[in-house]
Image 1 (tube, rainbow, N blue to C red):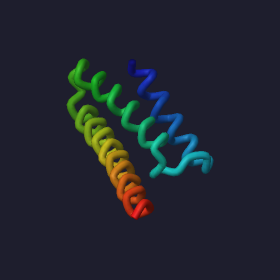
Image 2: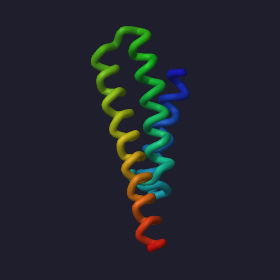
Image 3: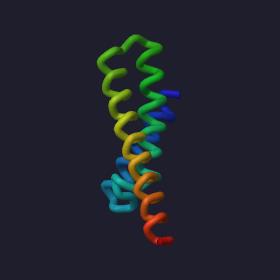
Length: 82
């Protein structure tokens, strides 16, 4: 579980630094949310509270950004059909 979370975050980071993904793209945000979510679970299980807070905030920020993208996409569709 921890290695999958770490791999997800590192993959997103490497793709972003190589200009393959942008930090506001859904795939990047999904990889970050998924990876930090898994690492947050791991941090909780091993009682690493500072790391847990970091991962919860990181996961929450990625999920909030995904939701904002989804909302703005829905609004764009409404305006385009008007």
